[in-house]
Length: 241
Image (cartoon, rainbow, N blue to C red):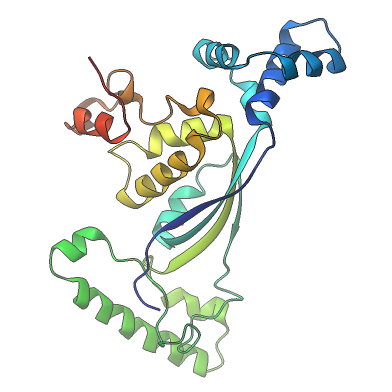
C-alpha cells in the first residue's frame, strides 16, 4: 500500500491495575494473610500509598501488572530498537511467511515508512520511487522460486512491520524514560509517547510522572541536551513554576 502511518492501540491490561500493585506491595510490609489483605485493599484508598511506593523506589510490585499493545506502521528500523527492551514479549509479523510480493496489498507495493526529514527535504516521491524499484527486485527473486525468507534480504529498513507488545509497568516506566526523551530516534519516540497517552489514565498514580527525566528534574543527557526542555514539558502537560 506504500507509505503508512503509525497506529498504536491498547489491546489488554491486567484487571484492577492499581489494586494489584497495592496488594503486592502491602504483602511485603504486613503480617496479614492474602484474604485479609485483599479485603483491606478493596475497601481502602490506594492513591497515596501507590504514589509513596513509586516515590520511594519500591518498584517490584509494578512488575505484576501488564499492558498489551497492538502497533502498526512502524519500520523495521524502529522494531530493531524496540526489541532491545528485553523485559517484554513480542509477536512480530513475519517476512518469512507473509509475502511482500506485488499485488498482496492491492496496489503492487509493500508498505513502508518515510522519515519526516526525507519529506521536508522534498525527497518524498524520490524515496517512494526507490521503494518501487526495490519491489521489482523482490518480485524478480520470488519469481525465480527463491523463498520469501531469502527474498526479504533485499527489503529495506523502511519496510513496515506490525507487532503485538506486552510490557509490565516497571519496564514501561523505564521505556518511557529513555524513549520519550527528545534524544530518542523520532519514530520510536512518537510510538512511546502514544503508548504513554493510552495508559496514563488507566493507572494515573503510577504513570502521572512517566516520561523523560526532564519533566520533573534536570536533563540527564549532558552534552547531548536537546535545548528545548520547556517545549518538552509543555508537550507532556507539565507546568513548572
